[in-house]
Image 1 (cartoon, rainbow, N blue to C red):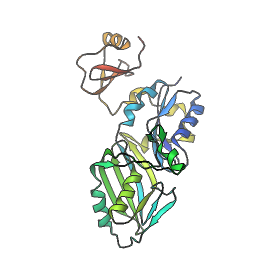
Image 2: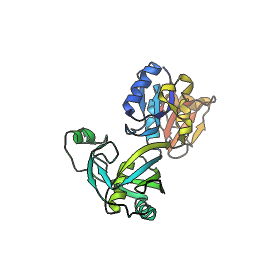
Image 3: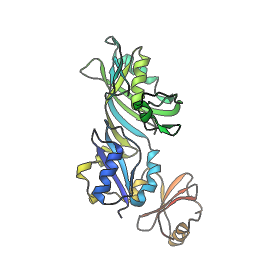
Image 4: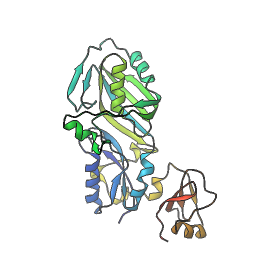
Length: 279
């Protein structure tokens, strides 16, 4: 079994589940998962864990994300992106770049965001997109998210604006686009969404799904590269193997490496959270 992390540059038309299924066939093993869903129409960085590295994916899910895309003013859709049915149209030809930037500024920083119906979140045990396909819309609680950066630039089309967003995990860029349209007195939707980074993992690290080989698998220690790590000695390695606490570790999430640089465990506030080393 291969243990490690693959950084995939997902094509449009593939679900995140499709990517995992393809990787299972490519690497000939079942224990594979991803760190966070990317919309089928979206492209870009998707982190896929293999073998024991699947236990590390929860730490990758929490990393900040960066996206590019285009906000199309004047047309709202059922999915908040270009894949949905048109649900409203407005004349927004008078909206300027400064207007859009002002609207984006109100959606920057800590905000409350209502998840879209076309999403994988569960309400009452049902995924929202399943309810949406059945024509059912339910109340969704607004959730706190943080938009660290929301840059807007003009394009050749006066109703289309290029956006570059850095945000916390769980932020829906489709919802940001729709909220920009609402803030401007009309409607909008998102198109050409591309995830350019998850934490320090960027498109420069990513490979097309069809090109993946074992050479593209990063070691488990790389999966924790956005977190502090320490090297432990042989005596501490024995403690780790038995799931014992380790004194004098940094607060929060810390990767523990052996003398050869291999990740042997992840500790939270000095206590084991994930142990990869055998007892």
